Image: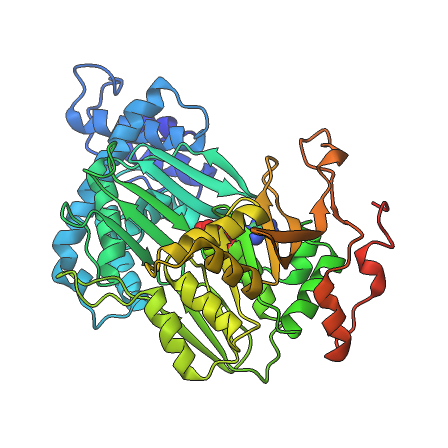
Length: 503
Ligand SMILES: Nc1ncnc2c1ncn2[C@@H]1O[C@H](COP(=O)(O)OP(=O)(O)OP(=O)(O)O)[C@@H](O)[C@H]1O
Ligand SMILES: [Mg+2]
């Protein structure tokens, strides 16, 4: 029986309707509604407000069941549901009062408490909802009150890796590396702002006109950026990079086609041989993920210091010290930069320094460290090719403000960095290593680079638009591999090209 029919039945006679409903759907809850005995339809001007609202709620519930086909009715109905939600939320706040911000309650206890109160509030609303509809309504209100409102479901959905709210009425998500527009909207800019406030206040930060952008992390480690007007011209924008509970393993990266086993073998040997490795790539290409995999190759006996803006790396070793930079406080003081942490880490007797990403003057300190005994360090840089990565590192060194001649900087870069691994997100949404490149040194004024592996773009794409190419060895063996034998590190000679041509 449809909800509209149930409603009509409810209007026709309580005892009869209850009987009918229960026989067809035992979970239907039909509260006693004082409806007029005539057969007035909910849309008729003579219907009482209560009947019209109830009919709208029914239509809304129907519409939710056929969510992907928006109709005229569903627009009207969503308005009704919104009203019901608002009313229930308001009453919930009245009942719960200040306990909602009571920090002595754990998240779980608070959620249990609020859910219990909400059940009472919703059942008092006297609307004909099935128990699953009621549960869903309760979930939605819980998400609004304690969670992240309409986007909470994407946070809970493991197939979503990124949630992007461009403005209150436009939400995109990333699934399997590709962006999708969703039907989800916030009811208003205020609702979006409330969600943003909830996120930032939980981490002791604030966002307002005087400091309109914030980087924060959710309790589960997901990374959040929020920016509000006047900087965000169309209204507040929120970006959430979800924290993957399980960091992608090297096996998984191979399975995804990001790497091949030969590359993985070379990278492992490089990390064990204390080469300095830079992972380069654009935004969201998987730099941090690959850095995490590379860090996994650091021998357990070594002392590792990791330095990040917001901790993301998940090292499995025991002997690890994790450092995180700190933004300035409300008075604009107390900032601790990545650069401060890199310098500090040198006094911590590290065997390896892993810097989440270099994006400023810390690059100079990191390169110096790499050149002066802290070899085997790893980091990432935002660049679109290995050549671009070199140029970017040079620019970042200039940001240290030391007024060094370009030639000196270039030499510093060329001698510090041994290997650049370039990641690219291809049009088909896959992330691939497109270059594994050795930094050989300088020739005249130019840093010499030699690719060991490149992605074979020539292989074309399949019917689904997926790239068919694989990484292929160029046949050139990196010079630094000569040191591997001395260090007792074995790599199969075939990986550099005996298989060249085989795809
Ligand atoms: N090889 C891969 N294949 C598919 N998905 C991946 C791969 N590597 C990473 N991801 C996913 O892509 C997203 C971005 O990954 P990651 O944070 O490592 O990128 P990033 O380059 O460090 O991003 P940013 O530039 O924002 O720092 C994550 O959701 C991650 O799980
Ligand atoms: Mg990253």
